[in-house]
Amino acid sequence: MRIKNLLIIIIPIIIFLILGTSLVFTNRPITDESWHASTAVNLLREGVMRNTNFISWGDIGPSMYSPLFLFNEALVIKIFGISLFTIRFLSLFWGLMGLIAIIFLLKKIINNKIVLFLSLLLVSTDMFFLKSSSTARMDIMSASLTLIAITLFLYLREKKFTLAVFLSNLFICLSGLSHFNGILGLIALIFLIIYLDRKKINLKIILIAIIPYFIGGIFYGIYIFKNYDFFVNQFNNAVKPNITTINLLKLIHDEFIYRYLYAYGLSPEQSSIFSIIKLPVIIFYFICLIIFPIFVKEKDKKIFWWILLFYFIVFTLEPIYKTESYICWITPFFIISASLIFDKFNVKRALKIIFIFCFIAILIISVSRTVYSINRNDYQNKYISDLKQFNEKYYNGGKIYGPGEITFYYGFNDNIIQDDYTLGFYTGILPEYIATSSDYEETFENFKTVNVEIYNHIKDTMGRKYIKIFEGNYFTFYKKIVSQ
Image (cartoon, rainbow, N blue to C red; front, side, top):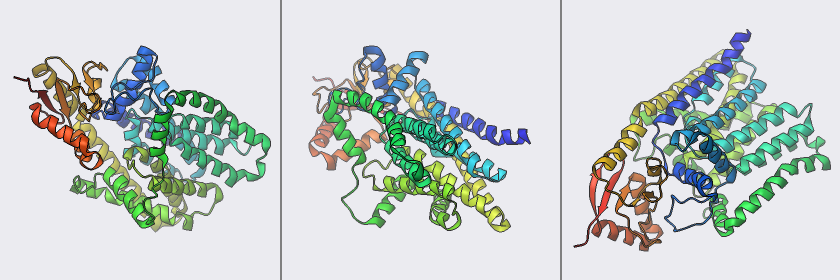
């Protein structure tokens, strides 16, 4: 029996590590990874937290990304060296920590072993949890620290309430220092404490809870005042609610379409038969969100639905960044909510069979999507292939402006590659080469409505001053025309 219980935990962890490691080595790098890494690299090289890879707005001064992730990244680079894979394994570590926290959560609230095992498999193979765990961004670190905080509080609250309050708030503070979204974890934790233990709250408990934020606030205050104006602008853009519309149905529609459907490859320009097959996954999770309060009444279990609902509302009101990167915050709670309903239905044979079928179907879809991505190997077949050909056949030295992720290939040498999608509009400097990608070209087109002056500058620069020299599987390269 002990071996069986152990396997229920170990098998999902092994699967997560196998799939996550494979994605670390096969996913094409993205711009965000280079921007954050540039800051960590400069901290080690020059002692300054400055993103010198990104110069589209000119020199923006010291970086204002949440600092804990950057220090964490710098430490890993210091120990293991500068590498895309090095910093991706940092994210995989935090994904593993989040998965372990979920394991403890589910063991505490799920009674049936089959439900527990299938639920853990769903989390360990979830495409968004895996993608965040294999991408060098701070999302999974922040989300996992919040999961650890919630788990610690729920395990310690009954016998060691004071310790539970201190440790959970400590990890929430660390989550906030890793990403602005950590404030979601703070609100969720405050709700948990009040919802479950409001009678235990007194002045001593409040002061103990504040200690981590007081220390973290001093540290963060020193950090942000290095570039206060840029911090305020970045923070306002990140958290400002969407007050341009009061149509709740439209807000929900936009969240469902632009975050979830696009993330599953169901946008009009992406859709395929394989993508449509994934649609029932989204429908199933949202049905569980709706029916949960009907079937699950226990107070200590209903808290997970409240957290899920809170996350969904906040992300729905979030005005700009309908990015799939944030989905790693919410999918664990979709799965936990579905698992609690499944656990309730387990005594009813027909409903049990339906949920087993749904869980296995989602498992197959998730694993298939991840295996497909691994097999496609965009890192080698697009990223490395294009840059190797360009470097060997066309590059004769000089500056390149292009997507920031190219810097991994050139070892973060700003003399070779920097990310300037305004093509020198602010710096007044034109490079020897320009590299574009589909994302870069989309940014060019967006300037048509955002800033016509920049758009005209880009159009004139690309049309009159550069000539295409190489079109690869992902990147297209242009060379400056030599004046006669």
